[in-house]
Amino acid sequence: MLDFKDGTPAEPDYEDDFVLWLDAQATLLRSGQFARLDIENLIEELNGMSRHERHALKSRLEILIQHLLKCRFQPERKTPSWSATIIEQRARIQTILDDSPSLQPKIVQFANKTYPVVARKASIETGLAPLVFPSTLPYMVEQLLDEDFLP
View (cartoon, rainbow, N blue to C red):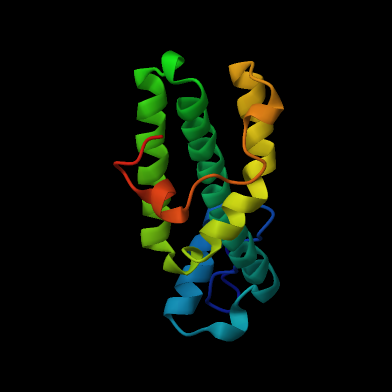
């Protein structure tokens, strides 16, 4: 959407074309035209990006812990796929931490918080009784992130 009445293009509406809106906001920032920024929606998007990164880390930890539990409590059923999943999750966690080192201290909190759900899911996937699994996270952060650690 362009408005050439005053010689400058109008900013695209956030609701009409998100990518065009993002490009316009970046251009305004680069050119120092801060008064023309869509501050409310920029704040919303920045907060959403932060939530997304936290969620991605939690999700990767959940999958990693679940596969570590499966390897520990059903070693006879361990498949190359489980090992590959563990490798992939650790690599993706490391990528998240490389991009956002401030999330490193959150790993313990996220892993402990998600553990009860992970243990239930591992119980369902393995067919083992829930009481087979420890009541608290049995791994230290160093083990979770150690590419050579397998239970």
